[in-house]
Image (cartoon, rainbow, N blue to C red; front, side, top):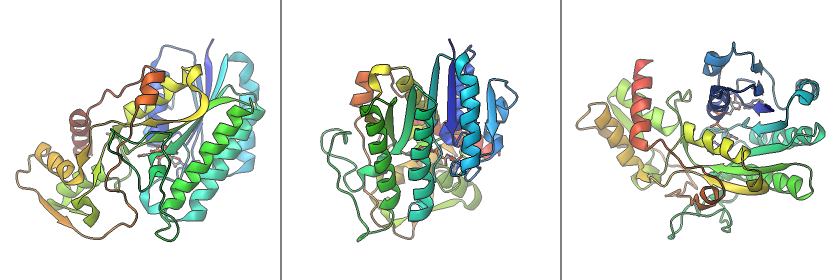
Length: 333
Ligand SMILES: NC(=O)c1ccc[n+]([C@@H]2O[C@H](COP(=O)([O-])OP(=O)(O)OC[C@H]3O[C@@H](n4cnc5c(N)ncnc54)[C@H](O)[C@@H]3O)[C@@H](O)[C@H]2O)c1
C-alpha cells in the first residue's frame, strides 16, 4: 500500500527535492506539504504543483489553527495509506538567523515538538527530524576521519557568541525525538546534515551561490577572514534527500538516534572559490577577505559510517558534478 507523507518546510531546499524524489516513483504515495515562505517560494515546487498526489498549503508551523487543519486532513486520509510519515524540514536556517535566539526557538524547537506531538496523536508511523551538524560546534572534526554521532560535544556558548543558539535548539530536538521513540510513541531519527547545496538554490548568501554570483556580477569574491583557513564538505541536496528516504525505508534504523549525513570530499573555501572561477572560465580570480565570524569551526568533517552501515545510502553527486550543475543553472538565471 501507499505512504502518506507530511512535509513541513516543503518549498525549502530539502523539502522540494523530497517532493521530486517521492513523486518520481511510479507510486500512489501522497504528500501534504506546507511552508510559510519564510525563505522560499512556490516556484521551487512548480514542476509538481499540478500533481494530484501533492497538496500544498501556505501554512506556518507556529499557527495552531493551520496545524489543526493539517491534522484533520491526515486523519481523513490515513485509512487509505499503509504508513504515515512526517518529515520536519521547516526551520529558520541560514547563518544570519543563527544569532536570533527567539526567532529560531519558536520554529526550530517548539514547532518541531508540536509537529512531533501531532504525528503521535494521529498515530503516524515515522518522524524524521532534520537537525544539523552545527551541533558539533567547536569540535566539528577529529583526527580519525570525521566526528561521530556518539562523540561528546564542545560547544561555543553565550560567553562566545549567540551563534550557537541555533545549534542548541536543534540539539534539544534530538532529545525530543529520542524520547518519543524510547517511550514507544513512534519510530524516527534525527539527521545532522552538513552544508547542503543545490543547483536550484534560492538563497544568495549560501557560500556556493555567493561565490558564483560574486564572480558573475563583480568579477571578484570577498570572503570572510575565516575563509583563509576554513575547510568544508558540501552535500548536494539530491544526496541529502536520498538519505532521508533511505532512513524512512529502513525501520531498523529508526531507533530515535542521530545520523550524520555528509560527504567526505573536504575542500578549503579558497579552493572552492578557485574551482568555481576555473569552471566559469576565470583564469586569475580575485579573492579578497573582509569581516570575521566568531565561533566558526575551521573544519567540519563528519563520519557517515553509521548511516552507511545501517542503510544502503551513499552520496552520488560529487562536488565537480554538483558545481557544474550550479554554475550552469545560476548563470542561466
Ligand atoms: N542547508 C543546510 O546546509 C542544512 C544543514 C544542516 C541542517 N539543515 C536542516 O535541514 C532542514 C531543511 O533545511 P533547508 O536546507 O531545506 O533550508 P530551507 O531554508 O531551504 O528550508 C526551510 C524551509 O522552512 C520554511 N519555514 C521557515 N519557518 C517556517 C514556519 N514557521 N512555518 C513553515 N515553514 C517555515 C522556509 O520557508 C523554508 O522553505 C532544516 O531543519 C535545517 O535546519 C540544513
